[in-house]
Every structure is written in C-alpha cells, then in structure tokens.
Length: 340
Image (cartoon, rainbow, N blue to C red; front, side):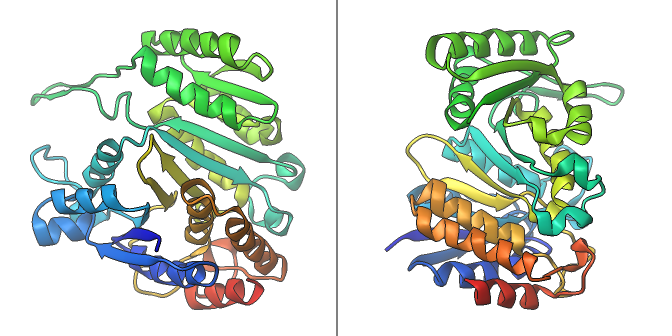
C-alpha cells in the first residue's frame, strides 16, 4: 500500500488537504499518515518540524504539504521559531534539491489573468528551481546595525539541477542568473554551459539576466520552455509566473531529490485572511496530487485523469473566488470529482 505523509500545516492548509485526499482516493489506494507542521507544530511542540515528523517523511513514499505560515508566527527575532523553518528543514532533511513548478495557461482562464489573452495564449513552461543552496541556506549574521546573508553555490549543486532542467526540456532551457554582478551567477553560468556541451548538446540553451527574465515573463511568456534558476530567483519568478494562469491558487509544485520521497505542495501560501470560510481554491492542491502521482509514484494515467478533470471543470464554468467566481471549496471539489 502506498504510504503518504500529509502535512496540513496552517491557515487554509487543512481545508484544501482533506478534499485533495478525496480526489486522490478516486484514482488510487493509499494510506495517509497526518502530522503537525509549521505554525501548528510550533504551537504544539515549540518547533516547526520535529525529528519524528522528519523521520516519518523519510519513510514515506511521498509527502503532501498544504500550506504553512501566518501572521501569528511572524517575528524578526532570529531566536524565535518560524513556520518557514520547517519547510526549509524538510527540504534539506529529505535532500530535495529540485523544485518543479509547471505554469500552463488554460483557455478557460484567459479572462482571469491580468495579462491580455494574446500575451499568455499558448504558455506552457516549467520553472526548475534549485532548492537547497544559495542565500536561503547561507551563513547569516545579525547585529543591531547590520546583517548579512551569504549566497554560496558549488559546482556539484549547479550540475545536478542543470541536469534536471535539460532532461525536462522539449526545446529550450533558459538559464536565469545575475552574472553581470554576482560571482555565484558567474559560476552558475559556467557550470550550466559545461553540462550543456558535454551532456545535452541537442537542447538549445540561452542565458537571461533575472531582471530581463522577469520582464519577459510578463511581455512574452509563451517564448519559455524550461526556466532554470537558483533558489531565490526561482522563488520570485515562479510566483510572478502564477499570474499567467489567473491566480496563484492554480499552481502546483514538486520538490525532488535522490532516491527518497518527493514533497508535493501548492505554490500559494496559507491565506489566513480566508481561513475557515470554506472558499479556498483547492485546484492547486489537486494538481499537486497529480504531480505526486506522476513524479513521485509513477502513476501517469491517474495523474492525467486528475489534470483532465480540473481542466474540464474549469471549461464547464467552475470559478472559485480568486478566479472571479463564487464557488466554495466544497463546490470546486464536487465539480472536479464529477468530471473525474
């Protein structure tokens, strides 16, 4: 039996996790093991990620995370725990170095995007973000009057994420960096070129500075195939790309590593302003289930069935509040299950 560790987390997290498991149950059998995580774990255990939860995640076939964080736990005190520390610890503890964020513009949602239809039509890209290096994991210092965050990358870290991007590409890898300013970006560019020339010469490669990439994502997103970039740049660009779909509530993600379980989660946050109201959009969570089936469990037909059901429900008129409609979480779930 497939064993999945589920982490509802905070805010709307538990509200979208429960219906996602209903959708999963419609296509395959599994055993779910729920644990506290993020702010909920801080409240109960004093830390965002306990050793017991990390051990359970390591023993699972996949890890499904809904959302973490909220104003209740916001602090500038470095000595106090934050929910996001649990997420960083989980990624590091499972060796999840590659974050995959597909961004697809659906004709049914062209009108929901703040960008004009002619700009987003045909967009189908993948952001491949390095997940365990860079400034988020570098050494940090803090005094009353100054602070620093160290950004460090090694050749091996860049090589392995570059291989993921080239392996996923259909025609083009756009490597995004800031090589005109940052030494880490110069190493990044050099290593990506080496991997391209030695292992993937059949795939086209281009280099784009991150500020230019941010502009092109708005001006001409359909030109991209695979965007390869480092941790912080990928965090920012993937959220920007979410607006192509009409809402950040539509984007799933997969975090993968070596031989261990992957972590699958929607890109959106915990949305504490709507928590408890029953109006959260569960579609990114459903699509994260599909990514888990495909990338983590090698169940391609089941993954495709969920994605098709989401597409069909949207084509039939399903619109949650973030997409300009009035469908509740329960109504959105029922619509997808009907098409599934």
